[in-house]
Image (cartoon, rainbow, N blue to C red; front, side, top):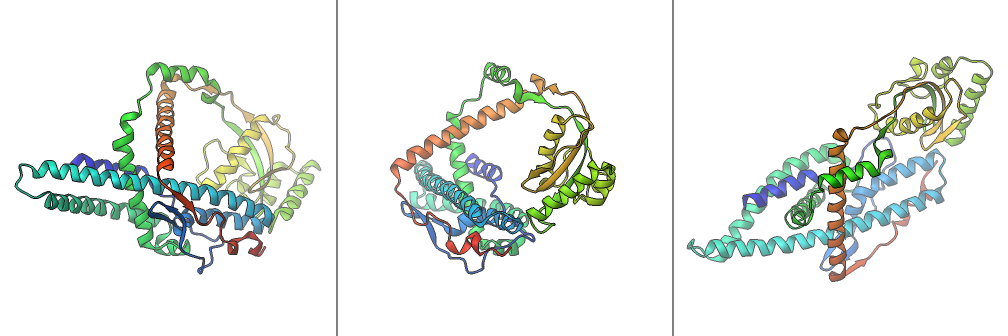
Length: 376
């Protein structure tokens, strides 16, 4: 039974929840509707379970609408995300329901075995097993819960997302129980890839293990949010591009015009290592690809990204290299195991979907959260 608890705790750590996000982006109305969005047999998917994941997407979309994205496009994006999150929550509820029933059978079976020569009734042993299970799980979940709440911006961050502390804790517990169930029931079905399978994958996917060489470049960035919309940012980028074409030094243009506070002081010079800020690194990944394709020394056209507009000038590109098999081996093993693990979960979900009735009660996101209500 100790292994039983250990597996639960391990899987709890491996399946963290996506934290709610705090910041200066718009937040959901405090009076958004509560209730159920789907029924899974005798269980339910609560709207807070959807909002815990969907709310950050709503806030990001609201920020994009304020920056120039059309409300119609925003609503299409939100509806697509709503359906994806709803389906994932239904899947989680199905797994939790199956896990709970499975563990109930395990507890009863173990209780019968322990009661047979121990001088205790089956009912007494069952009660002790459940108490031990709940106590150990509660203690470990409390520790993990504190970490997750901090990541969400504290209790206030959860409140901004419309999620109570108790709801957050319950969702975390469901994930942990379902995760333990996967470990006990699905793991025996997942066979580790052989060395030949790993080698075959490496040979069949050479492009996946080609590592580009570092690229040195300068760039200017024009932030749509800071410049009050897409059109303002585009105009600023075109103004700077024309100035460079007319003879202005690229580095000086970066110092004067660029909204990237990290590189502007260095004349827009971008170093090879990843950026500390994940948001900044997201658009730098694309800029590095562009810089590798641009002729050295030439100023690019004005480039558009979801974050705004950019101008690039490549200074040098180092040759790339192929990742040796010895370095790629663990990565390939993890990828193949992940695929097999996911395939087993998909098969289980397909089986449960045929056995357990599911009703979707709210197929569309609440109309009061439409992007047409966002003030630009």
